[in-house]
Length: 492
Image (tube, rainbow, N blue to C red; front, side, top):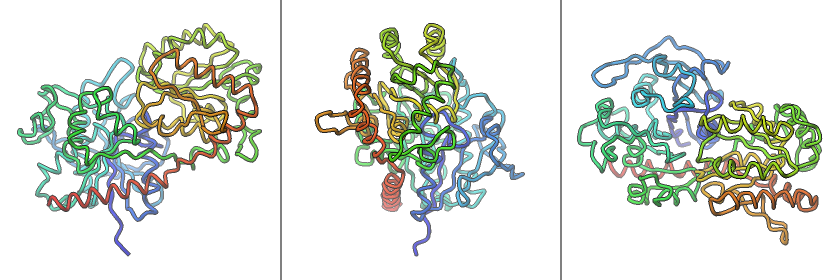
């Protein structure tokens, strides 16, 4: 037998330890599906306050590693847990950087020292790998917070035998968040000065950690095929479209999978009743339970219940929703929302709750238990995103027979097929132009079909039959890893 492929996952977040978005779902699930394919996976992430409070079994190893940052050497504590019995998770602990209420920013904006925090984390990943004796065949690193890893491997650690054969795959989950900092912060990195140029980490007289990942990784991917194409255009590339087009031959799109062990109404422990395709009656019980959870009237059981679980940000289409709220609430329907984000949307939805107490249930929070209840209890799920690299909630919704209404962008376009009543095909509703009226029209269309049981039952069955399991995506990642390793071999 071939020896296992040694994969080091470097990520700023992962479920079940800490989460702000879909990246955490990917980082927590993909390793579990790579293991049966012959991979030995170790995951490294920061030891946040959220991790401390998770209640999960995490052990302090009583060890520290030394991490260079500018002219200083700082110490990091090492903690350990497991994703599965054979998948070790290590945490980089330094309270000065990671013992905070939020991971990257407060509702008022980014932390002022994010450059220090994540340059430190990135260096610590490489030092910890050596400390635990895990010499990886490949480092799969995620988002701007880890973007410097391949830059280090191709400079400071170039002649280090421990990383001599280590290839890199860099996954872009959302190109709008790039890790942009003043050029004075470049000295933090310890990288050779020649890397600060327009072909390297420099970006309009600033440093760009996302760009570092794109420039120096062996292979790059995004989390859907459509998004890998979109980000090569000025509309979606956020200034990095040129360098992405330049690296087009090494850029791939792999749709995120879903961990159906976690997200399946047939055995979801968060639900008051389980259900599946053979017996859907439990879904109505879940709707009743969800209405109770939000203190909404039982009369809403008989009308469409719209759900949203999201970061409250412009990217997610909340400006479109804000435009149509009053028209929406003139219909006979209910609405529930769960999420946190920009202060203006916190304020807006608090007002909505006060204005429509009989129709709207609002929870400004992150609550995994309630997220499961919304997926099961809602009839329609709204995702009018301006752009959406992959999106996972629309895929969860499908499994729960909750019909998505989405904008045709990125992974939303790749996963949702518009319902065709004449053929009985499709698993949701989508609109093309980023326009409030188009969004409202699709909600109206969905409500019309909701009132026609023969169509609605067909839609729900189509949705629940959609399969986006991680098995397929994990196989695609394995091929990507092999491609990166071959490329690395060719360059040594």
